[in-house]
Length: 252
Image 1 (cartoon, rainbow, N blue to C red):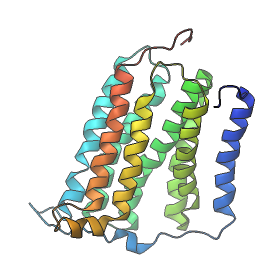
Image 2 (cartoon, one colour; image 1 turned 135 degrees about the vertical axis):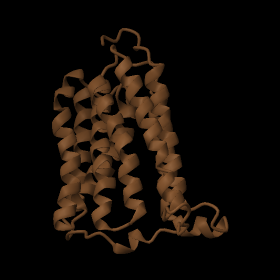
Image 3 (cartoon, rainbow, N blue to C red; image 1 turned 60 degrees about the horizontal axis):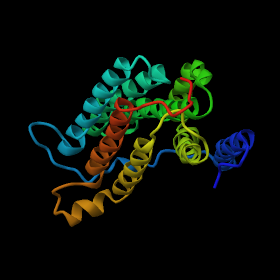
Image 4 (tube, rainbow, N blue to C red; image 1 turned 90 degrees about the vertical axis):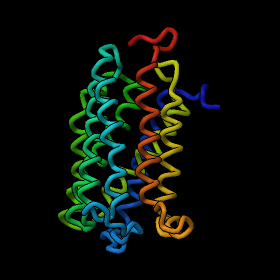
């Protein structure tokens, strides 16, 4: 469907999507954090740990981040290797950051949850650009990381979520666009599709946190499921880079 569209036109569409999301968010007034966000369904206090399952379910990010880091470090031939390493470091840091937040949910602790997430969103976006458009883009790794970090700090200082939402949602709009319209320098990119699918489902379970808790008689909450589903989705990326092979006629 998109194969006959010129590369420059594809890039233009992607940039318009990225910039369009920015304009869409910033024509509206500042978006403060809704304090009701911190009212999660998990109220279990077990072994001295409040919100027990929301806290301990973050262990999955430590596991995925650690194994992903090892795999990226091992694959010396991996395109975007530095960016993959940075990405899995951010995933690893989500573990303690999110656990700290869920131990005592409030705006101050939420900063430590969102900092590695903001960086991770932007690095994953950069990885897609490197693998599908130009390996030279990896030189922008630090600016991409800093953009993700800055989006969280702007919210923390001015209580305005617009920049953070732009970083999160514009990257996840552009990622499917890149996957569908650009040729990869690798034979397989199915891990990205699985990751996006599980992330989408994870966001749904987060939205219906209390409803899922009620349906399961408080056995599991939607936010706990969000952590587990997001971790599973990220694991597909670990498996993908472990088994990747260059596409035919691709120069890496």
